[in-house]
Length: 393
Image (cartoon, rainbow, N blue to C red):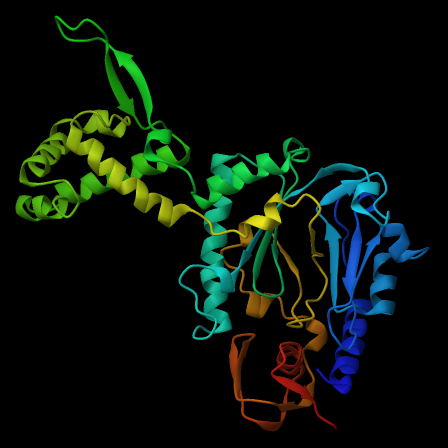
């Protein structure tokens, strides 16, 4: 990025911060603060500041309008002395539990082939899966959902019970959310039941309890068997034999069980017949793949992580790091809702270094190599992402 472009963006970031209010996170004075400047290299991080160090006698908006940083961060960790120059000297009190989803790291996403809009759409789907896990499996209540302004989404969990979790405990949560090291045997409960005449020991019944990965598998099994019963018998038997290890005999037995033992299967009993148990085990793998969330593991396990400040601007896109109300997540469109109003209403001239298409505010703008006049929010986005530079007026 050349000097004219950096100066323009820095100036307009300052204009933005002079017209908005940027809220501080809870316990702001217990957190470390940091920011990246508009230096030539673009990676100069200033950190180890307390909130008081950062703002002095003013407020956060005064600092942001004056310094006009490229990126702004605060720590997930809370400390006795957040401005200490070493992590060991800060005196750790606890940390928010933070989850990060990056669009270009998701399975099936190719940053070289997929558009920015398409990648963010895939990331939204992953976010919804993550929220389902956090709300229904962990019953977390105090959560903040944020569009990162760049490649994806953050979720901050601040339930009191998570603050003092160790890195190892956070790793266990990560494994659960990723669906790693979760085996079918781990989700099945076994209980003794009365045995038949002549049996010396009680029989065992394996079940899928309600809730969690077991509950999801149980729901999928019930739905799958309903699909079978809606088919012609020949088609149902053929579908069942697509599973490894299930031949004609087991397929017929599974279909009979679906017809005759519906209530037991709905209650989670997978021992009505060995074939039903086999099908449930196969479906469990599909449930894990469809329901897990591909979070960035190091972010969640790092108790000292710096994370983007909601309400700040992302220096790599010019979009706002946006807090999203939980009931608005499904309707949120980052390429519309995160475009700062500061950059709407004016045209600027940029030099496009390459042909690029920018999709913002529901419109598509195609820039060819050379000088072009575009809406300012398009120009800011293209310049921040390195596709264009500021042209002389």
